[in-house]
Image (spheres, protein in one colour):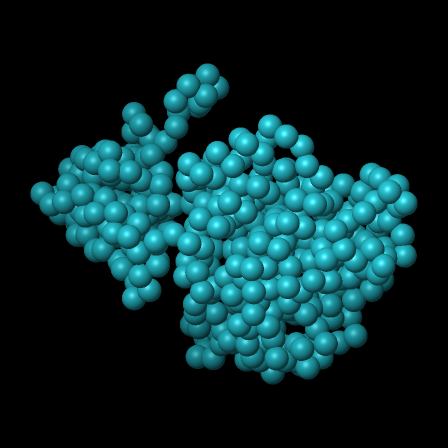
Amino acid sequence: MDVYDSLGVSPIINASGAVTRLGGAPMPATVLEAFSEAAKQWAPIEQLQAAASKMIAQVTGAEAGLVSSGSAGALTLGAAAIMTGYDLGRMEQLPHADDFPNEFVVAREHRSGYDHAVRAAGVRFVEVGFNEIVAGAGVRRTEAWEYEAAFTGKTAGVLYTYGSHAHPPLEEVVAMAHNHNLPVLVDAAGELPPRANLMLPTITGANLVAFSGGKAIRGPQSTGILCGSRDLIAAAALQMLDMDDHWDLWEPPAEFIDKQKLKGMPRHGIGRALKVSKEEIVALVTALAVFASSDLASKNETHRKNLELIADALHGTDATCELIESDDHEKLPLLEIQAAPHASTSAMEVCRALRQNTQPIYVGHGKLEEGKLVINPMCLDRDDAEIVGLAIARELG
Ligand SMILES: *Cc1c(COP(=O)(O)O)cnc(C)c1O
């Protein structure tokens, strides 16, 4: 591809899915068209965000939504919104938040590198529960009462990392927090599909939920979604939008930002560094509509055929292939390739060699310690799958 060649960068074959390091998911043609159409004209960003909010609300059942700079950007904005509400003084102080409630209670087992985005807003974490099972030192996971026991006058909210095995159940944590009038911010960045998870704010009552726009939704890699209660979304938007206007001229759409609730015009907020462009907003909204209505089951059928092609190419080798399919037909199938235990090249070495291939191939590296390569079909077409199969067969000897 010329654009990459001219920069002296070789495009790769991505067999590890929508990972950020490799550029995320492929955008469908309709999304790319929407992106370039949007780039040809200008539109006030707050009006675009208000329109996006309506569309996100329809799809998620939440009161409102915001297109953010990735799920990480959504987490920073969500944390900021929870700490400030419509308070202009607090907005101006962030990320210095020690003068008002800025503690988020979080289960130790819900911590991840991504929560730096929450801390970036000025949040301090109060950890509860233990990671006893991982430590091999106990049998119990975090329990809902542990959250309640940690709530104090300094508590601003709760951070919850959602997943199909997340514990305690989100509903229980939400109920506990709401008993104390505390909001819950949920990181559900990679938890789509199943599309049913789009309804998390409605189903669980969580106040704010963050999704990635550049993973399965297949919008621009740099986008995300924050959805939830109207006032919190407004507070998040106020801290991201460019505020260089006159109070008397400024007319944000009332259903998106209630000007009546403001004592004046905020300055550029902590999220000003997390801006999204008109093209990104239009493309994300387009991608979300496509994702919400697409036939994921039949797409997965194509993905499965591509994975079978790779497995077939490995027939003559000592490796064993396992097609991993979920009961949930919306979830991507994966192929796990287990190098033979006595193999002369380890999975790690095969992974490295594939990256050094004439056309570099990046495979999923999450199970290398178990001696497995994981193939995610999301960014592979049939030709790619053939190349990947042959290359792995060669490396496995
Ligand atoms: C991918 C991911 C993020 C970051 O999402 P971006 O859209 O890349 O900012 C945050 N949290 C979790 C759990 C993720 O998987």
